[in-house]
Structure formats: C-alpha cells, structure tokens
Length: 219
Image: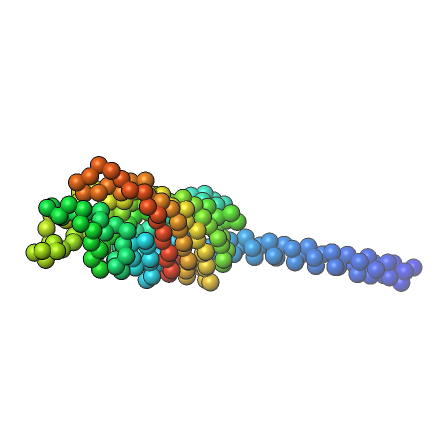
C-alpha cells in the first residue's frame, strides 16, 4: 500500500512539474520584461553632430520628455543651426536695399531652426529599438549676411521676425543599447506656409526636409 501511494504521488509530481516550470518561466519572462521597461527612462537629451536641412548642413541639440505612463507619446524640442552649402532655397528671402530682388546665396550663411513636435511610439518607447513618428512645427530665423558691395554686416540684411514657418512629419528610429545610452536617426518632410520676403507682402510655399544622426542620454 505504501509503495502504491508513493508511485501515485511520484506520477502526479512528474505530470505537474512541466506545468510548474512553464508557469515559472512565464512569470520570470514577464518580470524581466517589466523590469526592462522600467529601466528605460522617458527623458532624453541629445546632440546631433550631423544635421542636414533644405538650407544646408549643421548641428543640433534636443530634449524629449514622455507624456504618458505607457510611453506612447512624447514631447520633442529640437533646435538646430544650418550653414548654407550654396543651394539654399532662401537665398532671395532678403534683398539689400537698392538691389530689388537680387538673388544671392552666400556659402556659410546661417539659419536657426526650432521644431517643437509630438512623437508617437506605436509600441511604446520602452525597448532597445523603437520607431516613432509625429507632426512638428518648424520655425527658422536667418543670421546676418554681408553686403555684396561694402562687405560689411548691416541691419538691412536682417529681419526681426521668422523667415520661415512651416510644418513637418518626422520619422524616427530610436535605439537604446543600454539603459542610458541613446542614438537615433531622424528624417522629416514638410512644407512652409509662410516665408515672407523682404520688402514684399507675398509668401512662397516651399518644401522642408531634415535628417539628423543623434547621440544622447536617457534619464
């Protein structure tokens, strides 16, 4: 009788052991997954050593902050400076007094960008590789340019308001190899809805484009 009871108990134990192991494995996987998600923070500061725009090539800095606990939405605040490579679409936005609509494109002339936007992560921002997209407002200002005659910086070459206002849809591939290290590839396309010309009331609609390779820190 004791031997039979022992055999019955042993049989039940062998039958239940795989199920227990499977349950433990699922629990461990769930716990590890939750722990991994908790380790990835939702605030990011970044620097882009390579930033290209429709104006030229430059650099940028940025700040990102999560807006919800699930990590689906984030506020993005990038700022960039771009230097003309000789094919700027804004060469004729500002014309020197007395030169009408003279079109010129000075290599190295600066444009300052600020592009606040919202990033949407379809599968949340918690993970090593995540894709995001969303709309951004584009605001750009021009730096001073040289008078083509006197070669001096003069106020007549500057403006007091934004040269470009537009919108853009940005796409972002976000990679986090570790808990704090962050890198990303951003690409955006859009259009301007206001590009005032100096001395004119008309506006010109043109395309906007940006690409950035970012390195950052998550915290």
